[in-house]
Image: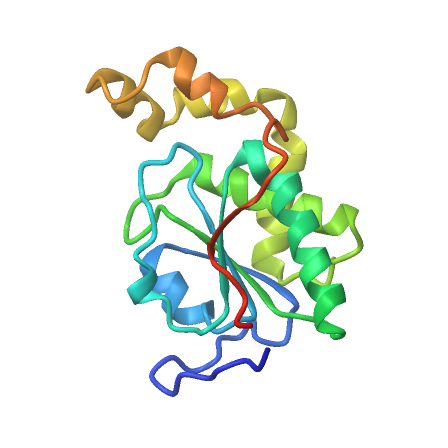
Length: 183
């Protein structure tokens, strides 16, 4: 698959790294031109609009449950491509709102990629990974205590148990592919 460059979205300072990280729709515009885009959404509150993705690349959705499956899929895709692919990880939160839960998920995906040997990461991706690595034992609490987690529970969109269920690491064996590779 050939990477498509969109002149409306010039490459970011992270372009030289294989694994990059940014936040929100602005972040998608800044680093979205990649072979694989991973949209991280810890609590399923912000689905991606594929029409806004500035790339013809593959789009995956990831959360804590699917982080390892997502990383394995990316490694398999890289092997099938026969070359190093670029990976942009984008947090669904953003645009003025800090989403701690989504940063943890982004870090979890970066951590899983690094475990598989895909570890040429931007400083931004490395920071998200360090946040996850340092807080792995507390992800369940952090999701329920996060502003978004509390908001979803308070407005009845999710129960505390449902939020905790979203924090179970690697419970899903299949990645969520939103846009498959071109044939």
